[in-house]
Length: 140
Length: 131
Image 1 (cartoon, one colour):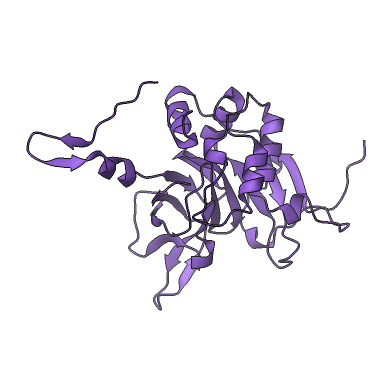
Image 2 (cartoon, one colour; image 1 turned 30 degrees about the vertical axis):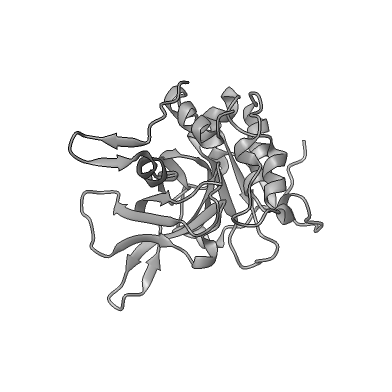
């Protein structure tokens, strides 16, 4: 089976990059002074996620988080998974690239993670280091 | 996909082991704007995180073997005028991880203090061993 890095090289040559419609806002409960962070999916990664046959199962990344540097990792050699929807790909990225203490372990009342359309991210960067997630809930 | 197995590569005059090419290529690269952490182009990048003004994390799809890789970064102004003191660099040694890295972009004042800001487009390339 091809190594993940080789699959990524083949996919980049074959697939057209896809700009996601979503961003993930999150705050670190262990660093209260830090502004809200904004995760932006990479367009080549999103193209690979939507096409399928490139990325490994998310649980291989989660198991590898407990593997020490220099020890063999599972995710580069795992069988690739099939195509995802854009929404499934965003959930995959949340689990892969955001610390578990934010998306899994946090028990507080404050909303510290939101998936939002890109249009909801302010374009004015004047007070970027003061950004916090709006805590007002929109009720349907 | 076919595989070409060779031990050496030669241009007729000089010969090098194929390993120089395989191990010497960039394992991760990305050019991006820190404002919004938007990638212009990339390879082996899963996502970028805008942590604040001039503060960007790069998350890898295929992790590196460890955090001892080489990272080369650069910054440039969006317009044609390039200042001499602009920079994009590793935020701290603790941020150079097997699965991600974190960069600061900005420019230096007269006292050589770094003013971290979003005024630059940036790029980084990583060389080293893959996981």
